[in-house]
Image (cartoon, rainbow, N blue to C red; front, side):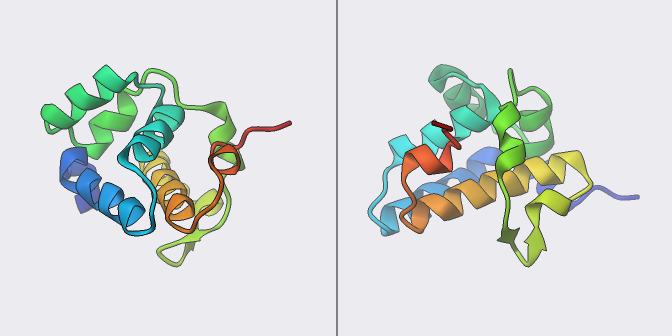
Length: 118
C-alpha cells in the first residue's frame, strides 16, 4: 500500500496555512504553536527546529516527544471523516491537529481546545 501524500509533506509547508486560518479569525500564531506543543510534546524550540528542517508529517509525529494522552478526547468530523474512527495512527494524529486548528478558528476557548478538565 502506498503512503498517503500528506505523510511525505513537510509540516512547514502546511503550518503557514494553520496560522493564516487562525489569524483570519482573530486568533494568533502563539495559539497555533500552543496547540501543536500540547498535542506533540515538542518545546517551542523543538517545534521551530522541526519547521526549519522541513520535517515531514510522518517523522514529525513519529518523533514527537510525548503525544498528549488527552488527545483521545478529540472528537468530531474533519474532511468528512470522524477523527475518532480513523484507524491509521499517523493519519489520526494529523487529523487531530487539523481538528484542533479548526476549533481555534471557530473561536473555541483554549481551555476547551486543550481538553483541560476541571
